[in-house]
Image (cartoon, rainbow, N blue to C red):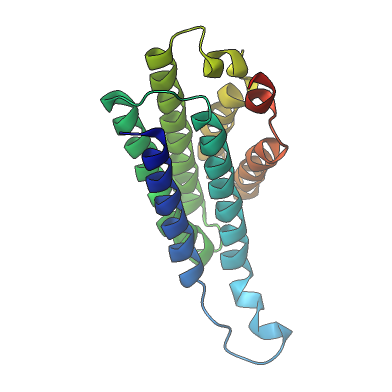
Length: 189
């Protein structure tokens, strides 16, 4: 399989996931600002998930700029990542509809953690195929953001039961951390 075909498939899946999320947003029942109030948690959950998916899409694209060959391990690792990303519409709806209740907030963190782990597995599969001196390995270096994200998700999951807004704050912090453009791959290429 070519890199372009794998990227096109991944782009399509992420586009569908985002489309499903936006279709889950309901129209307010009313004609004033008060009609929007019950939808605020749903909209905030949507924004967080949209930004997270956008970050995965962007980083996935940059990572695949370094790929020269695709093997079965990379294909399965990519599907593994797409599986966890495909759960974001469900989690976004649940966390939003519940008003960021503790259990849905913790499970949102679990899915985010598993997506981060899946992304790491995909990176590892690509490096294994291309070697420790590959462009991706050189670009990642120590990968502090990649290593700190799962740790922050791990902290946020139990904190959801103590004070859920700390968990939500950690999810936002991870997103903001990745929202700052990461030029490692671009500068390596």
